[in-house]
Structure formats: C-alpha cells, structure tokens
Length: 406
Image (tube, rainbow, N blue to C red; front, side):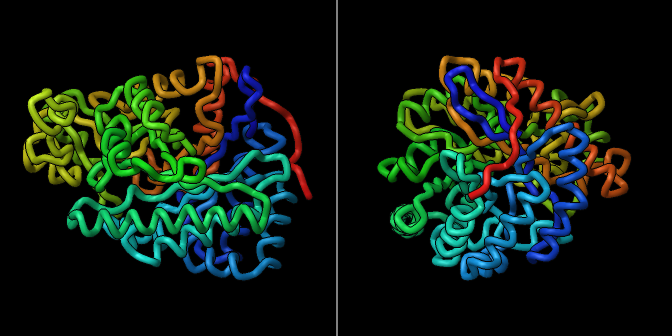
C-alpha cells in the first residue's frame, strides 16, 4: 500500500514475508497466492507491498539469472503486488523448528554475509517499481555480542566499506539506488541507537543507515523522540522501519504463569527489565553499562523467568499489532505510536519504507495461533489495516494506483 505524507513523500507500507517458510522460487511464488493476494483483497487495496524475505540460495540464484528476476517481477505485477524492500537479516531456514542464535550467522565479519546482501541488492534493483525513489534491505546489527572484540569490529567495518562500494556498483549498473539498514536488536553487538551511532560512525550514509524495528526499540527501553534525535544528530538515515510491538509484563512475578505460555523453542526472546534504561544511559561518571548485563537482561524468556529478573519486562516477542495479549500481559503499542508520531507527524516524513514484521504467528500461544492459511492471511491483513489507520490518523493519505511497469 502507498500513502502520501503532507510533504509529498510517498510512504510504502507492506508486510514482511519472513513469516512464511518457502526458500525456493516456486514456493515463494505459490505463497503469493496463498497469503499475499488474500491479504490485499481483505484490505480492499489495489496494490500491496511485500517486504520479501529471500533465503541466501534463492537470492544467489536470482542475482545470477536476469530471466528469473523478470519472471518474479511479472508474477508480482500480475497480482498487484510490489516490492521496495527486502529482509536480509535471516540467511536461511528462518521458520525451522529451532532457530535461536543461528539467525545471527553468518555475521558481518564474514564474506558470506556481504555476498548475500549484495545479491539481494542486485535482485531488488530489478524488482523495484519504475516510480519508486529507491530500495532498501534490512540486515543484522553486525553480529551477536559474544564473541565480539576489536578485531571482529575491524573486520566488520571493512565489510561495510566493501558493501558501500558494492551498492555503488549496483547503482552504476542499474540506475537504481538500494540502501542497507542495520537493525539494532537485543543481545547483539549493536543493541540500541547509542551503540548504532558508535558502530556506524563514518560509514557512507548515502547507502548505509538504520532499520528501526519498533519492538526492538521498546525492548531497549529507548524513548522514540530521543532515539530518533540521536540518529538524526549523527547523520544516520532511517532507511526502513519495521512496525512491530513487543510483549510487556508490568509485574512478571504476578504474570509468571501467563508468561510461561509464551515460552517456545524456535526463536530467541531476549528479555529486558526497565532497569536497562537507567543503566545504559550512563551517569556521566563513566561509560554506559552493558545493555545485556545480568542485572536487567536475559537472553531468553525462560531464562528470565528462572532467574527472577526484576520487572517490569519487555520481551523480544513480536505480537500481533491489532490484538495485544490479555491481562496481566500487554504489548508495547504506546512505543510504536510514539515512534510513528515522531517519524511522520512533523513537516517531513523521516522514512518512506514501512514493513509490518510479525514473524511469530506460528509460535504464538495455541489459543492465539492461526490454524489455517486463511486465518494467517486474515491476521496479517488486520495488522496492516491497523497500521494504515495509525498513519492516516497522523495525516498521511492513502493513494490508489496500480504497480508501475517498465
């Protein structure tokens, strides 16, 4: 879907397909009919955006085959679907029975991560609508935090320089600009916006910037106004926003039984106490504390429960935007709303690519989990309708048009 900001910026809104398991081209195209078309129809939209997730093998296949890229673009256009952004965080097998820390490999110290991301940029350059200003690819925030040292940081920085050069080559070859956004996430080498500013200082900001996941922002206990001001002061563009909400427990001791129902084996659900905010802000007498320090952080929800981490908690568990958990639990929708207001309520749009990214539908507590493909499509459509309404309330206006061809 497309909306227009008062400043004239076209803002693209879609949903991320990493909620679906296919990792080959035939499966990806089949998923368009199973999920994306029904979502578009439920929304009454003449055009639906997708934040495609392409696993590394199919990305390499498409990057090497212009005919395959043309076929994928034609399949999208025939269904009134468009792609301006790709999710390049998971490398492969993101809906496997157990993912956990595997999602952070390969990381930005390796040639594999660089090759994958440049493959995605080459693919996206040919999928972009003719009238799209640019494309975006989201990626992991360098690496998981352990092990991480100066040598690894230097290796990653060299890869980022190669990435910027590779993106410039894609633009020279295709005439299309693709930017890459690094996505701060709890537990990683870059967990919050302060760490992002430090880690990305001096990069080519015409091609590299931030992917701001709003659930991750909430889990870091960051205030959206301050976080976005920090990025703006550092000159780091918000390349993409992932519209997401995290699980919240005001009193995790009282809500322990309810929280246990959200423990599951596939994804990592990093948990942060509100003490994280004060500790990582620093006191002016020294460097801020580690945001993953054991006094306020745990690397998974069951670990936090067993450790009796003091509350309140925010948990890296993306929950459906339109359907917050039942009491005594809640979601971080207030952070989402504050972030969207900061991004769009002013005289200029601070980002033009928005992706609803609730990849956890398949692991929600049983009573909340979709039982059929149609139920999943209905849930995704409801999230997009919710997000569209939030943006309209901020003054953005939906536009009606068909996908541009070339």
